[in-house]
Length: 314
Image (cartoon, rainbow, N blue to C red; front, side):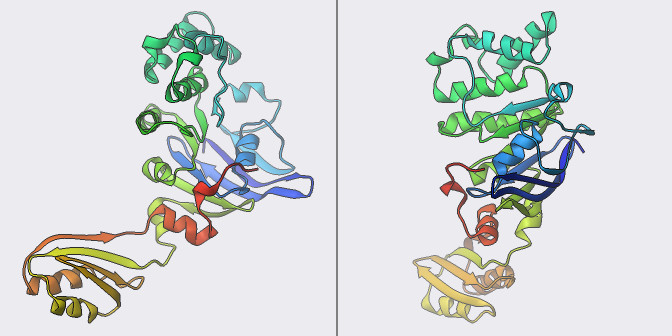
């Protein structure tokens, strides 16, 4: 285990931001952390990074107890904040030298790490430019570079793609995948559900200061009951075929538009093969797709809220 929490409690006055939170982050994985507004994600990040002290419970990092005063332990941690926290009056290269120096990287090693990190985030050609000249996506990449320059073993990325263009978002997500292949372990939060679904090894969902679910995407999807939707395109469409579909056990509705049929069945009906067999009895099938529940479906079922409604949280 690289990092983890065990029964962690944190209060701010009368507000209990974390209510006996427990989870583990294993070496080499990307743990996706999701939750609606006020779920406690920001407080998890601050306590895990040693920026604030928990009221009770245990927080570990690299097998040692995390503490707000443990500077040596923090040298193995990288934190990419929601806000871009680079110095606009310094060049990209100078920013990396500054942040690398803060983590104790010096001399030839620092020069090498600055070069490697700029290459990793695709900013080598812009090393001598100040961030004020950068696009939003480039500033985000520099922000990530500043958290990577000291080669952390554990990296926390708190909504690193907020407000940037799709191309920059795609670049960052691919970079995240490369980081894990190179041995970095990540905690990743995002308001974009599809990002977490695409890159996370495991997912923790929080609500009202508690962990309400955790596991792989498949494990989380298996926890919810969800209608099955099958879309099929046939060569010989007819009203009679629609009626045959409606007669299949578990089918709730059938929608017919030309050669295209949409068949909705109750949860657990597993009607894909039955629909295909009925269609093939009346002609050929050119396309058939069964929609599976997504992480969005899981999140809505468990929290009753949409993730992207969130603006800020505790």
